[in-house]
Length: 455
Ligand SMILES: O=C(CO)[C@H](O)[C@H](O)COP(=O)(O)O
Image (cartoon, rainbow, N blue to C red; front, side, top):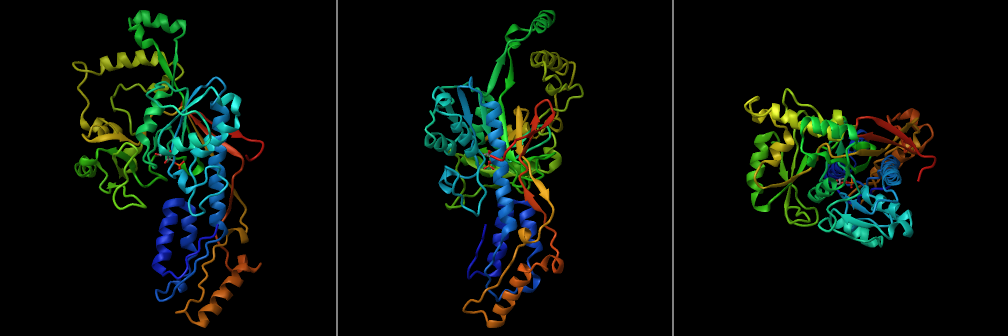
């Protein structure tokens, strides 16, 4: 990839670096900062900036990782018997990237969900002709229509076989931050709709009879909400790589009050999300505003559960979901008054606190909803100078002088010279997609899936 800024000032250069930091985060932007020669930071000069192969590699590795994750998840979870399929959304609208994925705007990374649709289409007409696809927003609707797949809506199909979606970040317990594309309300509805009802085995029926639990509760559900992402989004704790904050969809007239509420709740930097190509705020597909609320990581560590001393995690019983329902009922009886005092504000975790604020429509924290999360991996290859160089080359402009031209060429030649890595050892490593995917499951086991060939 080549990012070229002509006849711009140093300020533009730094705003571009900021942009890269936002778009690509972590290493790519560090490389840019490391390599900015201080001697060139002269505000009187105008620069052309060539940001070479390191960023290009980073982007293609990210794209390959997204595609690998999406393809592997589709292969393993969209099975011939699945007829109603939920399709998630991304951060980039299909108007800014070619649907066929053959052409990308090279200054942005693409979205993950188009790769999901691409792989579903590759399953063939025969399998797809009886299927209906439910979108989570404008982008996924476009993808479904352009791929000639049958479009449905969640009000027609309130139960979905499988939903596959992207995520902004996923933690070790499979809690996610979602809503970077402002679609998390519909995404959450489709995630919740993706359940499979399981009839309990006989020993659980006996258990129900003994405990006199209502038979109505014996229908437990298995989650079929699958998340796909690249390696950058696989974290221990939310807020590690996705720094923009928790996206919160709010009623438009309530945003100012909600900003105040969120500041008091622990996100003093919460802001209204502003549109990029329009004056004013982002308006969601549902006509609401989006607030991004960066909470401290401590509050994002376990954003869901209510802290009771007797709390029994559903997760411990995930092999026996029906059993866990009964346990939770007994547990909630024991932990309710008069046996136990009601929870105080401090006991209630972040998701509930935000959701309880009047005016909040939906919170982009998806807790205990994901069945499996797929991350395309990266691998670090030994450093190679040419593939990791970033050159900032000042070129003459009407206001620049000849010596500056000479300097720029010598700089360029030194960088291109085989001895350059000795003269200017740069701390870059070569990144690549190694053809593997990490899968995190809801029972907390992690699996590494190897693919014989890079798709
Ligand atoms: O939650 C979302 C949209 O609301 C997306 O799934 C999330 O932002 C990830 O998008 P991408 O695949 O483009 O990185």
